[in-house]
Length: 285
Image (cartoon, rainbow, N blue to C red; front, side, top):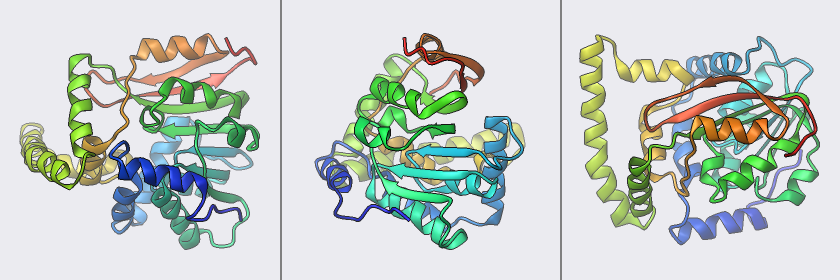
């Protein structure tokens, strides 16, 4: 087991950015989510991972979770048979992932959890290459999205798959949300102000959607990836740093670097565009 200590340089850097209002405390939010995690949520998340990767099993395959967050999808990959390596920049996210490993796969040498940054080329170079590299909703929060998108390329072996989700570019709306996130991360007052405005709006909107569609939108959200709608609201409001890109920009970026687009799940709204990409050559552009 190779688990980073709380006093590691990575943890210190992350905490400093959080304290200075330059980064959302993602791990703290996910720690609260884990209190509601049950077998049903895990099974839903597991199926969503199968669907995204277009596989039924990960037996005898390797899986790199870049920005493991709650650790839920690392857990799913391990349950599907993969040898898993999880890392995150946020200290509480590392703790979350480690807690899931301890709960479901104690003393398992096929799942490594540690602190690390996707922007740290030296750290990444020591990891080797993987059959599956997974980073859902993470790289746009690094503060250097395009560099992060570049850095995961070399961790994906030829014929391997890269699964990422990146916020959709909505022009002025994205600029507005960036300001909201900056206010949220500025301190306690900013957080309360933003939650006080947007939580009631999100709640009422979800109820109206439920009425119009005649389906419980809260329950449907859980069925999508096994996640918590309230914790995802908080993650959205506070998710800073914040960058965006169009489907075309991401597709072109990776096609120029030796990947082919296997599938894209696009949104016309402010959420994430989801990509499954296969590395077909060593061409780095």
